[in-house]
Image 1 (tube, rainbow, N blue to C red):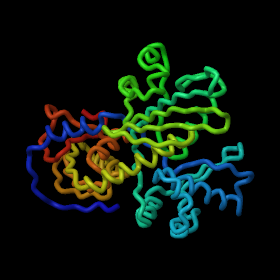
Image 2: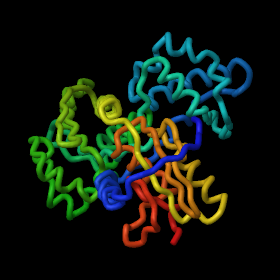
Image 3: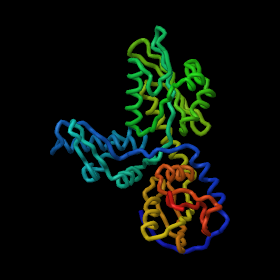
Image 4: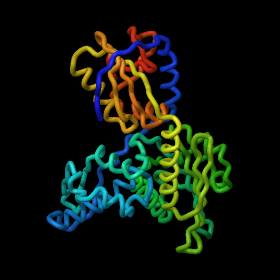
Length: 351
């Protein structure tokens, strides 16, 4: 990513608009997923064994970066990347037969884009999962974060493992007394989405994933999945693991569509910059976002710079990524120093 300087003149009428856009963009909290770091099991991480571990780790992060399981088996993509070892930034054995590997995310993202893939931004809104199951013989319930029993334990383990594989930040409901009064098993199983949607508000997620799992006869699970996101509903069928996997594929596709339709420029005024380190930190925070492709410093004055930010995403995704990163925050217009930009930001905690 390059950083170049330019001069220009700007319209001074957009601070209130910026504040409104920010509030709309971060209505749901986002989680920054550690996309390019993973652990693989190896008997001894040395020589050819370590090289094989790098290949497996690479395949895992390609899935998390795209939301697509097919990325792990794309022969042309794997060939274009070549030796995964050249992208490894850090590795560490944990003493339990696992090797933790961290790849150069920027370099791998560039490889994916060159191969025609859309990179799913690391800042991802949480997905609230409501999974109702019927195992036969009256054994039925809604899966919660701490629901006990063999069926619940197995479903939760598989669901969370798949969500981690695809980089989907999931939230399981608490199923406390308040929530059980709001949402019954029959609401989830019967596809009554209104009470489920209301109960999901407490978790501040960006999407709701609903599953209705028929677990008998044994060994033949059938789950009807529905993803509620942005006013849309997307349905599919599969097994328990196909819920998070299907959600990842569909959320990544929505991110791609949003990026294609609405990518462009955001003008950001950074204020309260008191020393060189403040300038460097603020610019570095913008540069490091997956939703940003380039920066141009358009105007500079004492304590304030105006930056043209080229986006890989829509504005809402950019704003969510700012919120998830936690380095910059918006400034209420009443507190604003004179500046010119669609958004007025400062380093978090500065006054």
